[in-house]
Image 1 (tube, rainbow, N blue to C red):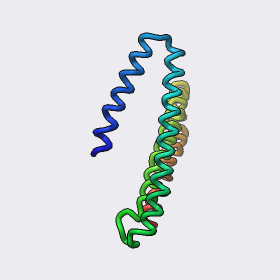
Image 2 (cartoon, rainbow, N blue to C red; image 1 turned 180 degrees about the horizontal axis):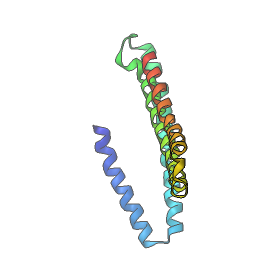
Image 3 (cartoon, rainbow, N blue to C red; image 1 turned 120 degrees about the vertical axis):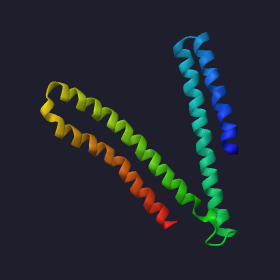
Image 4 (cartoon, one colour; image 1 turned 135 degrees about the horizontal axis):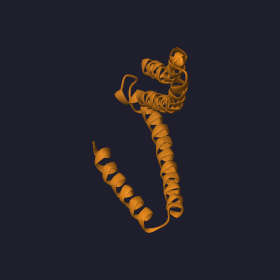
Length: 140
């Protein structure tokens, strides 16, 4: 809950700053600032993730007993990353295949079955992420 209380004002401030920069300056220059800020935030987030994963694993192994609730935090983070990555990949794949399927169906409606199979294969990526998450949570 505290994380949301900190991040929501930060997100609102960043949105306001980007909007103000975009209105005052040209689009290309603002885009450079936004990309630079995003890369800095990504580097900071990755550093925090590495610090959290390395610190929590060492603390859980030394201080907490085997059945402690913090012992499986790395598996839960891995499961969350698996689901998030698979869902984003599936969304991108469905966007492209769905658009192509609609274009093909507008020209030849008899291709409906083939188009839906291809879109269904793209959605299978998300199911693979869920399977990996269930396996990780089962191991924890």
